[in-house]
Image 1 (tube, helix red, strand yellow):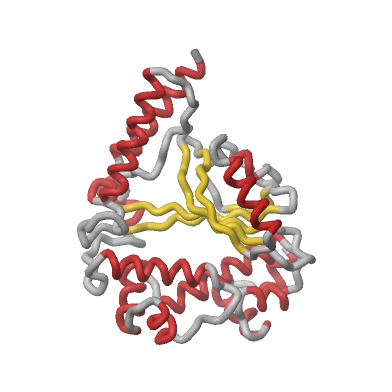
Image 2 (image 1 turned 135 degrees about the vertical axis):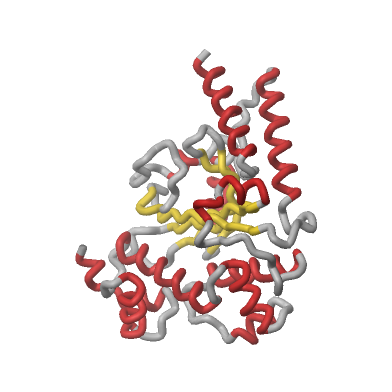
Length: 302
């Protein structure tokens, strides 16, 4: 009876999310053959179809539809216990020292295990997979993961997982979350990015930057050429889509990674500066203090 109640509660939560314009969640399947499981399967299919209708990679969505990418970071030790994370959608409030596999659905656990095995055996620096995370509303969060193997032997963290979830801020979602996104993502019409192909290029550039935080930013004309666009559309389009400049985004993400490494590893600060693409420790220290108000050495002592 309790299991039946829990499943009904999941359906209720799913419907509330969909009513608010959020089609990103799913209900975990049990594998049983029942009317309830049929309803859950149909609900998941409906959410997937509605989500696809606002996906710029699938259909030509309205030009004022905003695309938001939520990124969850997990720093794991060699036993896959969580050392640090910003994931806040889990029913377990304290995730530190929890096995990462505990956050995965039963369907996703073998996918993760296979990915780690491939990452280790073939000695890749990074591997890509798709899994589902449990969340606090008895729903699951489908995410795309980039799993990085940390090569520095002095680091306590052995794996870094960057899990990305794409959300479309359609008209319904913007209305229900207007107060929360009012300052950061005002309703606007895209003027430079006039097609879904333009939007995808900028999103690909963002992903490229996130995967190359260990080195300085390449000249913008070179990046534009690499992705088949021009420097004007790259600069203006990135600012239009993400409400920040490409340079500022690159710097902020490197400093965020540096903060994570300072607080969760014993790596020398000079090594962390190098890992995050700074040409010198002095440059790194000045940028870090400007962003966080304290130098990296002071954060390490806390």
